[in-house]
Image 1 (cartoon, helix red, strand yellow):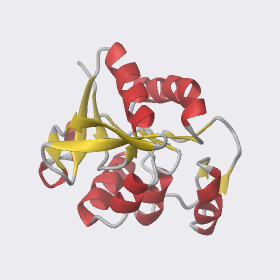
Image 2: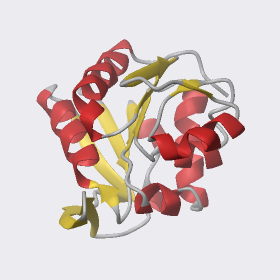
Image 3: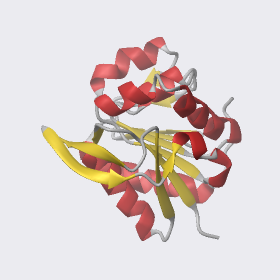
Length: 181
């Protein structure tokens, strides 16, 4: 059975943090779908300026977490700041933790996890500027390329993508972990 991975993003995601993992997942023969509060398409941020537009496969209001084997949360500054105040996005994220499904989040992506209230007691990493936010939310923060804690995969920045992609694929192949909530 082919695995289906939800990529939760909105305008302002860091382009390479979506495109690189998406490509790695598709090389495994898995199906990826971009889920967003937006319809039609979302626009990437590419380091210092706006990047390409990516088609949205499903609006968050119509997406069912039960249809997916794992969740990917790319970073960027604008993207997670918007998602973390969207109640549909937070419910979607929580459902993956409740089911014990793998969740991969890079750079600023863990900001959404903070608002979803799923980081307490977790070992994590992130972009350094949100280190204190994660610690204040109850996570144990590490300055490492990739940190894995019961199916939660986190990385710091685009330089970590090769390690992030490998661990994400490994965790998705392992499948369901002990539910975290």
